[in-house]
Length: 571
Image 1 (cartoon, one colour):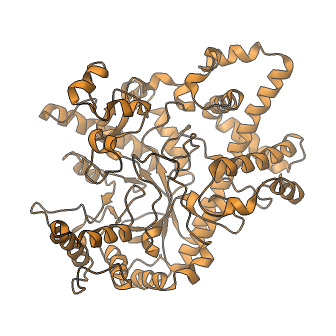
Image 2 (cartoon, helix red, strand yellow):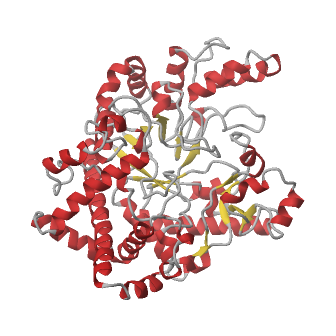
Image 3 (tube, rainbow, N blue to C red):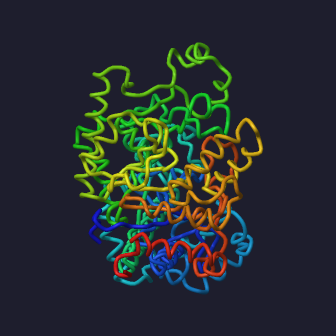
């Protein structure tokens, strides 16, 4: 696939975890993704977009990753068809010890799902290490070990230490585990039995990552055959408890915690509304990374390009300057109700702000611009032309989008936020071709929820006028100004929104799967407390969607043809 902006693309965004497949074990996996891509291709979509699939921490959030290179093991399809070392008998016996029906119902139950998949992978690994595996696979594994040794070696030791300590919170580890050198000395002092047990763990995690890489390349091959572009996601940061920080702390600034400034659209909790989002990721030390010509980034992006046709670069603004906190997220509650002076005193004289510099002077703005331009040039060298998509949403500095446009990196267009100086919505026909248009990302309410909220506001005399105006603007943007407002979210409103986005001039137009089907469920609420984020699953497998959402799908397919966005080869 040779991406070219001359050919408009239409896509669907779905978190992998939210998908269901024929062999479903409680969470979306590589097999479910192939089924999803096959369904999308048959309907005429030319692109499917997912969220990050790097290995995650205990909160299961796809943007809180414990490795920039390792895949999340739960994305692996652990059926005998996809995992040759696993016999049908072993699969059945292991599944019989778990409540599969319970796992398949309702939201993702991460702890139970991961326990099941770990049992299945462990059984497959026992067969593999007993030399009963296919010789071709054994040779492929040996090549993977050699080719990926620079990251796989440290990662597998780190991952074994997580299991050994029964916690991924590295600050709770004993001193002899907190660095690669210390861990090597510690391992050398183990008894023969303990050393063998630890080495077996290391080998297991290498095997898991080899299986993951093989499966993800199978997904890529399937998408190539289908003629569907696969969009991956590069999170802006890595966890402070990650293999990357453990192995290479010198390329990070561990004194600050990255995040985003307050935004009016995020009012999920008092802290986020007042101070912004505190993600907890350490900052990058760009000077330290420059010493080897940003090898960490080149390796990360290069590996991702082996699987994905496009890469969404999360929080692109952060590569120009990043909002940071002088305290960790676990301390947020201490600062929620403080004044700036009180917070500064408690945080050692600092407040949240942009790093390395804010935009308060022309000199600062120019230095920020040059930094972002330099980094995106590095990223383009590692990926190639028209492979990156920059998530440039939030508090956008005036120099960010001109830099991205000059480098031919598409940015995002959220119609509700794209405004002329007089406050009116910019027509979709005026969007730059090098852009991705969507009504909602994983962080935002689906359009049905947005519409329902506006309808509720129309019952309040103080809110009615702006709510009706926003409804009218959305319909005007979609070329459906004749529909009356206010009105409930109807099939006519939904059809207008589907077609209106596809009609814009953007190279890529993506509907989140909930928007495609007219659903109100959310995958994530930024700043929300609790364990419901990232657990939502879409009802039914892709073949079952046709019966569940016939009118919505018919509308979308018709809109693809009408707006010239049918998948190439289906015209």
